[in-house]
Length: 333
Image (cartoon, rainbow, N blue to C red; front, side, top):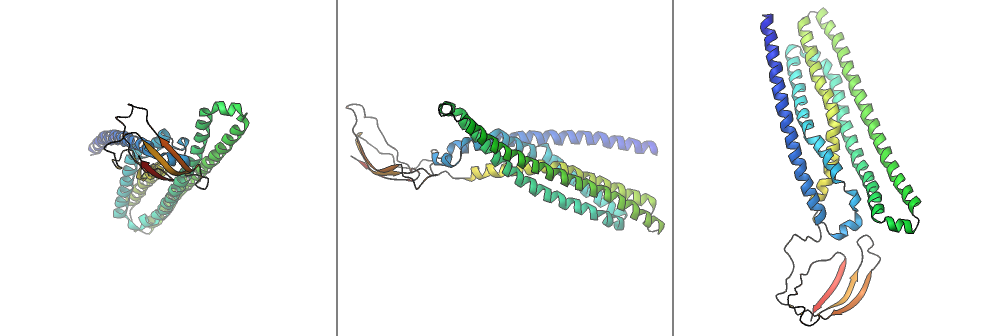
């Protein structure tokens, strides 16, 4: 009999090995494919935005590699581990309730507290991740703009000013990450504390039930180990949830951009294409201001005329499109 049970457990171990390998490799492949598609759509959405969008947002605020890495870390094998730990938790509770519902209810008290702490931890880490990405975007903005305009910085002796600005944004990023580390450490410690408290309560109350003759020692041990298996799944959730929260925080910013409709879309076939054009045109009453400074006019009622050189405009055509913050009256002569 004992040999049969040993062989059964050995067979279960081999089956678990195959299943774990299969679901991990499938989730990792799915994560790579999904992150690649998101990266492609993210880049396409970035280059599709109008120029006015980049007057309000700089290219340094969009770190494609970092954002996609966070998303991939939350949707690949971590998502598969999340599903398996939930299954482990539910299975342990079903077995425990079947053998002794009184002891199971008592031990579930600490488990519910741990689950509540985990939910709070997830929300706080997601908020800190979004805020940290904004700070990091400002740091990347300073670096990219400084390197692009390094000659101008040297000309006006602005190295010290740029260094101080970079250090300030970097300090904000470090402080935000420290706060996120404190949140994760405190909540993880509390979850582990309530897990061991659960063991203590279970052993004490289980002993009382045995002395009162309500349950047998074997049933108490079955409930105890079933709850332990479920709580182990809960502990694994405490490790997985922060990565999924980071992925959610990063994905929210990416999908906000993907859902944004640009005011000028070069991929759309709208506008008026003139059937014929002789090259003569005039612009009257042109007004223009940048989106970030609408109160500061750049062009004020500009009048201009254009006359082509002889025999050099036979193939000219014009495509009219909407321009940000412009009020233009065009007259074709």
